[in-house]
Image (cartoon, rainbow, N blue to C red; front, top):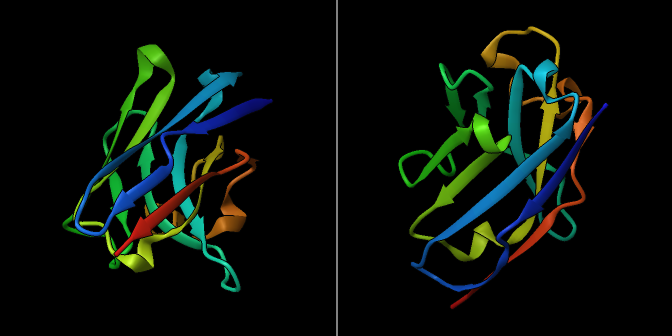
Length: 127
């Protein structure tokens, strides 16, 4: 089993930046891909970004591409999501996810590809 704990959420002004962290514990050596998803009130959970645990590949949703980066620190078993130029529509609960299976990066945007999920961290954007 893998446990995931997100942190770094909070209140940020529009145009500002935020770095979210996701620390993994347990059988971390089995992790192959980690992803970030978000869910705003009344909306479905949507994909934000994903990264291979090896760091070789990354994948971003069009909505955040160009203003976000995803990285990992294997020594700390932590994945980071840096988001810049935040907009009101970025406000949501952000969830970290992980999976141990090998599948194509094109599938990274599908929430049902991930077996492990964190509890989420709230991001609020003020105008």
